[in-house]
Length: 453
Image (cartoon, rainbow, N blue to C red; front, side, top):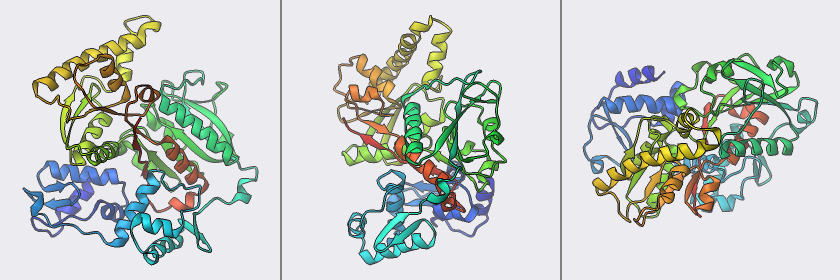
């Protein structure tokens, strides 16, 4: 699909300086995700066929200066749609609650109440909202059907060889907690299954092999792909199911298998991958008056580290990268430690390995004269910021990171929260209202925000 979009754009009539269609327009035209469109545009930009200018779009040819590009003006309805979608994706508007009053929303979006009502009524006609008097709500499930015996949701995570499961991160624990909490609130019974990547086997929590056909009362499926590297065999267990499938996608967006994107009953939810976390972080820093940042990552052999840096650049910040591409994640360092020291010493050994990498990156920063109070240090995650603070560097440095872990609260560290609560809310809303998603985008991005301590 990426190649098809590139071919179609190259064969269209255009002149240098002409603006390309928007990402949303291309998504709707070709029925693809934003990641596919962005991949096509990035390839054209890398080939110097088009020029991407932050906040203004993509243009044919080489446009040397942004001030030579005509300002792209969005219509009132387009602006309103963007702001509404942003509030929805960031959890500022709750799917499970009535919308705020029209007067409040018109003030928030700086539009007249007549314009707002027209926008909301369009949402009603498209089946996204319902209206009762002056009040608008997101379309909710048929409660009568829900209280029948069709009340089970299959919840699938990775597991070991006998079906056991141990959470590996705070975010994963948060995800589990919110899934249980939301299931109880909506009167769903969770059926817990585990997928073992080594054997490609599916188990129940007692370690017995099973199939989705063993659960005829299931009304939906939630799949976590966190730390599941061979995810396709996992997804294929459910390829023929007719009930809604919601996937917590913890991989690059372009890696979603095309066969599942095409299925009406499958939707993917992403909060951590892609450029949006970095873009949101950049917007926050710019709102605080910063124009440039240092970016530190000892995990730069990974798409998520690269994307966070690209998002910072896309926000308009000047980014000084101090990165190491030998390893792709904290687990790589722990894997080395497991092979080297006793189990009780693994965490400490891995942290010391990371510290040695960071010392080299700090030296690079000092040599390039990028250590200054006016330049914050953006860390790829809270663990790196914590290691910097352990090292007691003499400079007065402003640290900021990604993950919003418990460590960030102990250290009073501003950090980007991936908004797991909103992620789970969107997943359950889809399972209860799959028809609200039919014919619409298949990969949904949940926006987070920086939490200041």
